[in-house]
Length: 212
Length: 160
Image 1 (tube, rainbow over the protein chains, first blue to last red):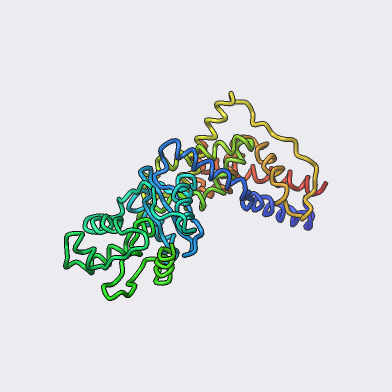
Image 2 (tube, one colour):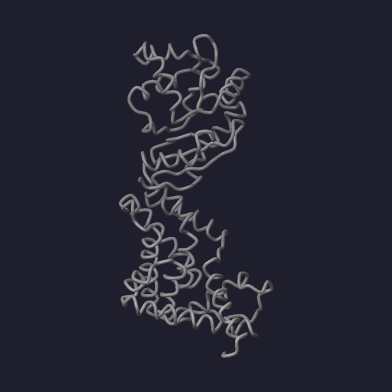
């Protein structure tokens, strides 16, 4: 105990034993615990927002649902972390990655991208769209698969013919792209116009639907 | 500042809370205590003040869950597994974690808890003392005694 080398070894041992404990981790166990927490939270009614991501031909998509229905679909370029932060702020911070609640949406989107689905049969929670935006989205839902409408026509149908720019903003901020088909709204001159998923994604979706 | 998604709370603090639970409880009980801690935390999360120390909040909940479990077990001592005499192939205790946890769990309760809350939960000694129902100085002594005991055991094992 008193000799110098022994003391040094003990000191090192202390650092090792404490840091080994503090560093120790079991990723598989934590993943299993996380998943069990998500299930328990759902059963307890404490999982206000469940989310997952899926791969798609237009990039990774974030899907989020409340107990009422699908509340958000987001493209990577919208920044998924930022989208989750906004959900925590505007819906509830009780947000967990929990795929089960999103299974119907994930499989319907898979079918859509495979060309095997033309309409979505999903319950939607539209709470992130308010006021005129909500009226615009209600009009978008009526545009059929493979069809397009102009921003001006949607403005008229939503009851404010002069609000063409507001229609563009409502489309850009659509909380449920793909499912509420803002990609089917194009400019009166036939050009594409903007899209939350980017122009390539918009073009890809319109081509997909034109082929079907 | 608004609350971040609870998913981040689990990602940021889940590993440390599991370490605290494993120091206090058998592996199965530790898993259950972790689950109860995060479920309780999730339920209360919208009411948590934005400037709160989230780690300390979680460790405090875990402490209560562990106390409940010890009480439910009829105040029986925590079962400790025999420490297998297997040297670490890498020279660091990383692959023999369960042996380390067993050594921690074999500490007297106050030392075990003080080591867990201070070194694994990152709580200041003042909070450790509050959880243990002792003074800050006593919490500091318990942690030091616990670490000394761990060091001695570690040295014995390392030498064998």
